[in-house]
Length: 236
Ligand SMILES: C[S@@+](CC[C@H](N)C(=O)[O-])C[C@H]1O[C@@H](n2cnc3c(N)ncnc32)[C@H](O)[C@@H]1O
Image 1 (cartoon, protein in one colour):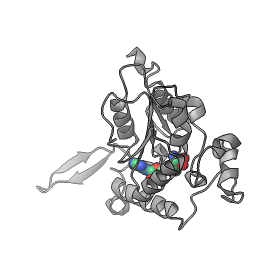
Image 2: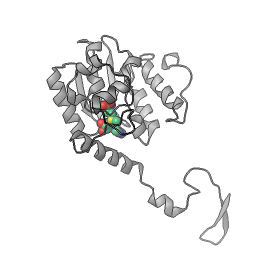
Image 3: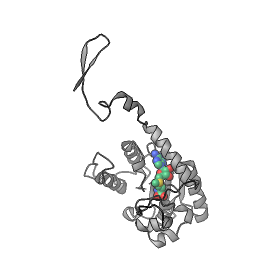
């Protein structure tokens, strides 16, 4: 605990309570705001979408040495997955192959948080079929343009790409059955807000099973400090 002197000259207690309040003020002033971080992320992914820089990281410590396909095969995509989508839909940006866990079903509405050039959206599209829908949300206009161009090449009619932030999803409440995301929530400073927005979008109780698993997985990996309750939303 430290003390500070008030305007009247009296000494008051200041309790040290968190990660910033005991940090020297000059340090706090230098720290980038959350919004600044989001802008930096958007700038980076604009450059990647426009081909100015490679975003491919894969499992190889020297990045995309083997190309985007090799990186994607290394994180769980199959050759037939990659053969089903336009080459430009895979920029090697993921860190896993989440659709295998999600297992979307015919007729469902699937939401991909941070859909980038559309890889997982296009892979989910035939799984939900013509009675279902896949919505990709991304905040980077250049990524959305790329994803929409890819959708035109695929002639995929049950996919839609929406511009928006994960922290305030452009999705109506209670409309989404299953949520997927590939290496994106880790980029958002306010992860709690992402989960609040995601849970608001879920369809009536029980349908968002995989969104919940995503939250659990993030907690397990240490990317989200607050563990989700052990019961699924269907039990609430
Ligand atoms: C690592 S890439 C993943 C792209 C895609 N899921 C894939 O596997 O190819 C991250 C994507 O998330 C988007 N993104 C990052 N933060 C976001 C946010 N707060 N709201 C919406 N989109 C975001 C970026 O624009 C980028 O396209």
